[in-house]
Length: 175
Image (tube, rainbow, N blue to C red; front, side, top):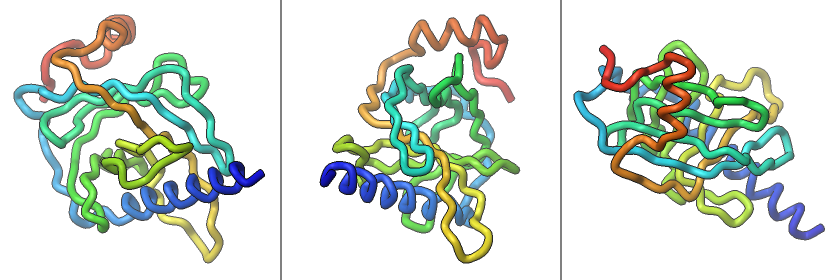
């Protein structure tokens, strides 16, 4: 019972931290994709729905240049190929965290960098709904927390297979 409460409290704190970091995007810079890539991260993840923390079986994938993530495949529970997300802007959250953002959408990828943890795992990135809350009451938001991210020197074959099958983002950088 103690673990349940401790885990629940840590999840709520982590969600609050990353959602608050993503809700204010006044410092966002809109960017074009870079000419090359050097960030190819494969990550494990947890999905948070309300008070439930669910281990995501499939890996997620982030690609970009330096600290700027430009493309991601985020795999929440139940999604076959995952959500294919193109980030067109980035900047710093009110907490000084690097945030990649989808313009005109309510989702952000925040580089948490181990400042929060879920179930004992230090979170590298959080993918959260950054739509501001209405009214005075807190409503739980769904998010995916990515941890154990490992960089490589190229796209993994499973990512190439998704690109080939779906016809999305076939290879080079698109303007």
